Image (cartoon, rainbow, N blue to C red):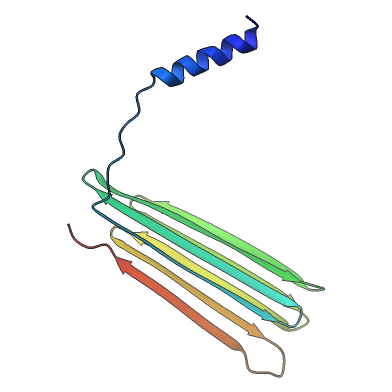
Length: 147
C-alpha cells in the first residue's frame, strides 16, 4: 500500500471509531437580524447583522454575524466590521461608507446577544449637497421565552 493510501485508511478508521455526542434540542430558540442600504449619486453602502441563540438544559449557545460593503465611482469607500466576544455576550458592529465630492452614503448595523436577549439595529443615511438627507432606522429585538 502506498504511504498516502495508508494515511487515508488510518484517517477513515479513526473517524469511524470516534464517538459522536448527541445534539440537544433547544428549549427556546430565536434569531434576529436587520440590514439596510443607502445610495446617492455615484455612492452606495450596505450593512447586515444577524444573531441566533438556543437554550438547552446544558446552557445557552449563541452565534452572531455581520458584514457590509461600500462603493463609489471616483471617491473613497470603506467598510469595517468588529465582533466582540465577552462570555455570554456577543456584539458585532459594521460600518460602511462611500464619499464622492460631498455626496455620501453610509450604513451602520449593531447586533448583540446578551443571555436571552437578541437585538439588531441598522441605520442608513445618504446625502447629496443642497438636498435633504435621507435617513432610515430599523430595529429588531426578541427575548427568548422562559422555560
